[in-house]
Length: 126
Image: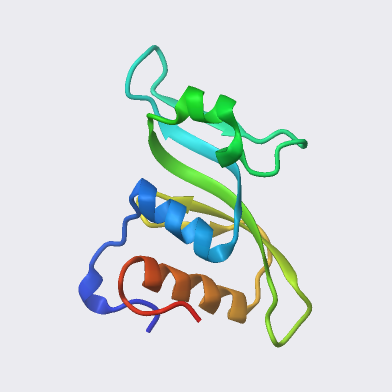
């Protein structure tokens, strides 16, 4: 069982997404935000090739830092025991969905879900 049945529907707060990103040692490459004011309902951005992690961009922070985070696109390296290191690309949605945009091993899936359990207070990351 990946997550305890008692948790119900899984959702991530902005701080939990940030915590998950930290546990995975991931870099944020894209984001979609719900605008709290202005002419646009949502705004989606992606990092230019020279920006390693848009969380470290003052332009990103000033433009969207106060708006509700809907989706985080991140990349991280995982080194499963069973195969060569993998560059994993995933999108984490505030409504609890994680979409792996790259091929991943079962070990990588287990690793991500162990980090999710840690963030949600359901156990420790492996």
